[in-house]
Image (cartoon, rainbow, N blue to C red; front, side, top):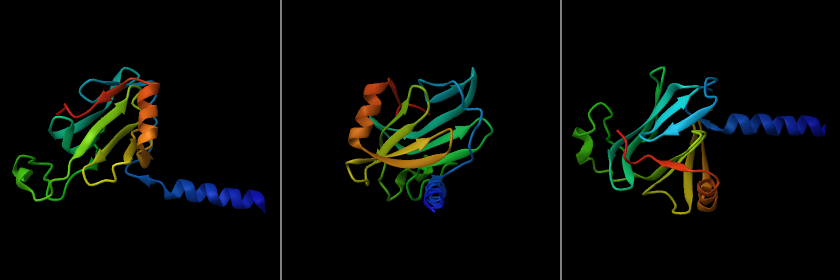
Length: 154
């Protein structure tokens, strides 16, 4: 009975994760490069796109995989990805603040101007899942490895 209950909890935990895309099996031996490029096994696997970069922020943030799929990590209401300049006058002034990526490209994290100041959104490019961590966890990520700022790309 105990194993059945543990199994049900694990299935629920996996099924409850917010997934934006499929699992990418080619994301092995990856590294992040300046400019938001993700290189795996010597081949470009993805590109992080920061739209309308500001001093430490992006108006919108996406990741484009090598197969052409684009996953929006954040875009404000009224933002037109096909014509970002035309949507600059949007009433929604929210932006992504301090987006960063781990040097091994295993995780991206950012917060928005509308989010609770103590929490950050995370995204795993390999699995395509979102999560949320507190500021202490982000500081631990920064301490453990060199990080790549993403607000100066695209």
